[in-house]
Image (tube, rainbow over all chains, first blue to last red; front, side, top):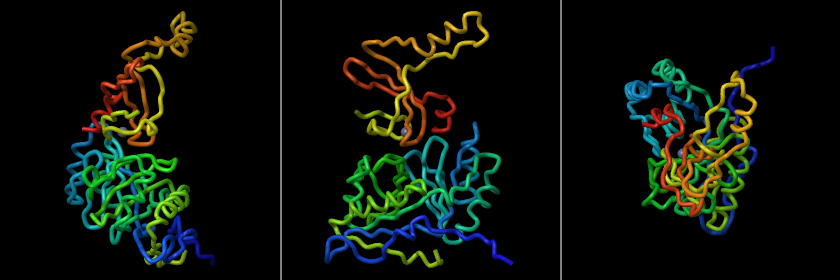
Length: 208
Length: 92
Ligand SMILES: [Zn+2]
């Protein structure tokens, strides 16, 4: 009998060319597709925001972040994307039980919509990541204005992005509609070329 | 031009799309003069020289509708607020 089991496929695997590219002899930027990551959009129901915040705190040990912020714990990250709206990512063990945990904690308080196969996420890190990103991102990425834990929904290279900074390296993550992932990657590569960049495919372990 | 979003803060106007005059009330389609009322609702605008209230959508941002107070003579923007009380409540 045919095997009909479905497995996740990377949005970008065919376009990722592992190794060093751009300016020779230096690596200012590292690019990586974030795979094995569950994605959920969480939208509070009318009048339930306080109750939702309480339920999430209890279930995940995280305070729902305010505007332009993200918050993480144990592989789960909440990124503020609008009034009463969060993009939630789950990695590691949380990749497999994120939706079930959210539904158990909050199905009467918020809309919980699986976006796992709807977005592509690219991680950009390195000492030139900030200047490479700043060529196309319209928000101020200077560490005075934007640092680890900060987030934004904005406009870059002609499309809508969700951007958040995860550490001081700095490392940023960008989520876009899946069909735009290739264009995002292409722009990031052009932008990073002058600093030298590396494409890391070590997380693409499953056959894609 | 920068537009202050009540949720996201000051952002480039490219992130927003413009709808038009704020505060229009959709007429009653069963009113005896409904056709004239709808004509005015769709087409007739104040076209004020000075301070106006306009609807903008933060389409490439938090996706909220906001009401922006703008002076059409100077382009000065003096304030903005969520267009819907529900959005305002969800933002708090
Ligand atoms: Zn906004």
